[in-house]
Image (cartoon, rainbow, N blue to C red; front, side):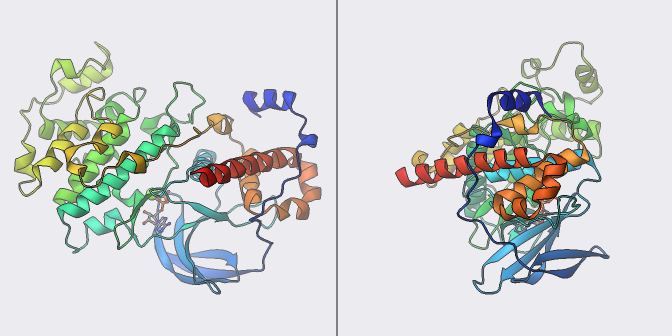
Length: 426
Ligand SMILES: Nc1ncnc2c1ncn2[C@@H]1O[C@H](COP(=O)(O)OP(=O)(O)O)[C@@H](O)[C@H]1O
Ligand SMILES: [Mg+2]
């Protein structure tokens, strides 16, 4: 139990909380098993009978993603299954984080959670997350034969920045932006996914902290210099750097900085951008390990972006150079990037919403144990399927989970009401 929650419990008698009524509650349904092949292994998806398998659409570090069609409505969704989700507690905590953050975000450029399939009992091992289905991801687009024009780049990068403006205003950094975590449709609509590595902007340790960033299984190629050199020093600018790298990958159809390790990553960055001037290194502590690390790298004059991308629109390259500023303090902000000349035809301040309520990271402030994580994910499923609380009433009482579940449901209900009021006044 976290300190924050303990004190909250001290103030509120949960037995007086209103009984939760979620109008969108879906009754518990009969399920069926569907087997999908994933890299030679068979993965069994247990889904409601009304779902028809379309195909496997992807897999990542944690899950297998499969598309399904709802028989009666024809609506298509993506279902991500995370098998034996609680075997690794750090990974399970990331999945919970993804569920909570995606549940909070309501924005066109973020994937939305439509459902969490209800577990069969409170002792469950697999997690199913149902999201809006997109046709493909940007990695596949970049490495396909599809012709890509400057309009594509403009529209993709614009939407990416529009999403980031909203995300950062919700007090969340993505920290793992890369082409495979950016989903797109044929009409070029773009949605960001995979928020497992997201973290709060606040200085406080409770803001999504877990293992040090350097231990993460994040793709190195999109990491900003401040992340590669000094994991404790980062802010919104890390996401801007990643957008700069993705932008270049679109322009050149190959990744820009493909470091084999930490040192090689910085080497490659310096090889293109040139050795940073002393004035661009003020943020790095004097005499620290990172400074010594930098001195190991041969000095470089860098390359002109016009040589690296001879066919690119000069405005695009101007923006790229500002996104790839070595000094995080000098890197262009998301706000200013949206106002850049390159987006003249797209930018409209009224249509670039920010999030009204920043995410409260106290949900993430707990020492992970399997039962605690199970309880928290179970509760998120109950937000979509409150019926499981009645079905499992005896087991929940025994585990002492019912109070927490009802409190979270009441919280979700309040948030839902707030949102519907906000959207009706807009
Ligand atoms: N909603 C979706 N629609 C279409 N494809 C998706 C969707 N969600 C994920 N994918 C595909 O599955 C891959 C893995 O999903 P992701 O959420 O990034 O999982 P992981 O955390 O395991 O990397 C993505 O790179 C993408 O290709
Ligand atoms: Mg991913």
